[in-house]
Length: 270
Image 1 (tube, rainbow, N blue to C red):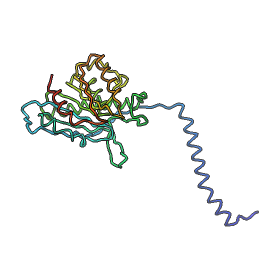
Image 2: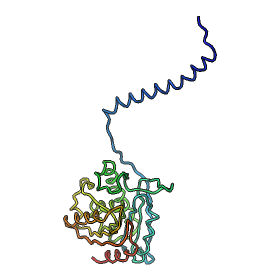
Image 3: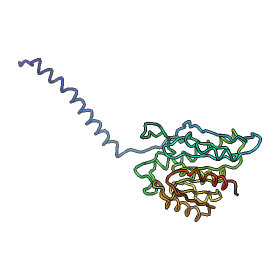
Image 4: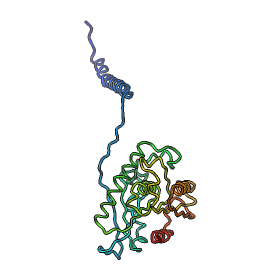
């Protein structure tokens, strides 16, 4: 009977973990191949807590109704940062509220921002490609659930008169969809640098929201959302019976603060 030398036993034992790993990998691949052809995707709606920052006008009087402006920040931003737009609105006597988007996004700076739906950033402009099922599903949850809850909570807390949504970029998309879906609760929508597509509406008919006043403001040098996309949104709404005011400015992908007095005048002019 042969004798196994000690040094050979050491070599054998060194190979055992590698062999076991290879077996595990093979079993995993085999299992994946067995299940892929018989798999399905189920979308789950879950509850989450999101803050809404509210700034009241100095003239706030709880016994009187105040116009509410709900500001929706862009992709990767925050509710707090969008509050930088609040002063012209509160000076006009409006309540200015900024909800935070529900999905966290890690920015290049290492800080956390938020997005309204799980955006596929392979294309900066969604109209250049079909929206994914995941994007559309997240849009619907945000539009139907979160925006409805934001309105209910604000109306329970404050004496609210007219309601306007003002959204920038990705927040503009949610503003469009909210104005159409919740058309019975909203008086107007203000769109900064954004787009809309009928395919994103789900079961909603775009004409449902034609009674909602609409203001579109677009930078002529916007590279993220070129002005022709804003014009396409304008034409889509006008062709479906909306009353649309369209204004451009010499600038890029931003909210033009110098035009906020124009926005406030537009809100006040019925």
